[in-house]
Image (cartoon, rainbow, N blue to C red; front, side, top):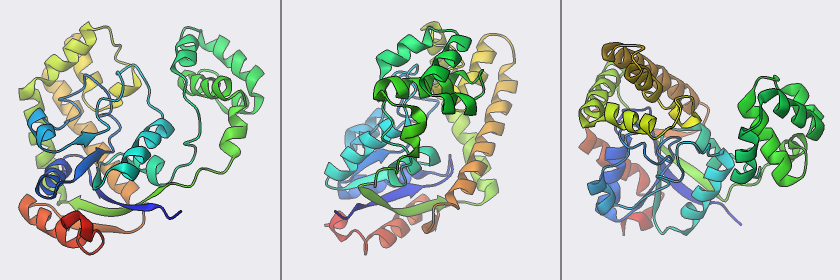
Amino acid sequence: MNPRLIPVILGPTGVGKSGVAFELARRYGWEIVSVDSRQCYQLMEIGTAKPISQMRDQVPHHLLDLCPPDHQLSAGEFARHAWELLLNLEKPLAVGGSGFYLRAIFEPLHANLPHNPIIREELETLATPTLARKLKAEDPLTAERLHPNDRQRIIRALEVCLAARRPYSELIAEPPPDPPVRPFYVGLKVDRHELINRQAKRLERMMAQGFVEEVRRLRDMGFPKDLYAFNAYGYRDLYEYIDGDISLAEARQLILKKIRAFAKRQMTFFRTLGEIHWVEAADPQKAVREVKEILSPNFPHYFQ
């Protein structure tokens, strides 16, 4: 069975992917499948720049709000959600800049590794030395490879061992599944100074929309700042501001620094993906037209 060709709009954070994708999807009746490592978490609206409700009312957006912030969504779990949508929607458009999840969907390594939230919840109650001893009994090879204080990786390996009833090291040695989809990448880019300017303006919009209040609500709900979901830039910095450890000005500077570093890592990753049809996005409407021109010959049914 030939994998289905899927249009993908990618680019560094702040470049304007969501706006271009939304305009194309609105005009031609497409559905957007978000490939974002943080928009999949509930209660994280402003800091992850999720599409506002008016946009979601006009265009279906998928893979948002899949799980609460204290659930660590595995790449394989995300890929299975994405494959079901990309194979069954009539005109799906994948949009995002998360290299980890892009690879999981289109170049899966170990998407067959099971996830079991009940087992994971039980493991989370155990002390790290206990977990390390347990992993050594279940899977000596993985236990030898991991540092005994690497709690998150030990828990994940144990979760797989116990759910699959096989050693983690055996499972990751097996050939990965063949993906049922293949990408047609269109990338958006602007020059460095324009990107930095857009990122700063977007952060200001987030702050005006209530980013601090969003983080305060999460904190008051009992979510600790060291959750995996809060690796998203801004959340931990604003936790520190709310706790009185840093000033708001310091938090803003830290967030901007992390945004720029993340965008640089994204561009480095994109160079590993093979062919990408790059579009200059300084003028969003012009970018919409150019993306349409690139996609039309390869996806004629998308424009009927």
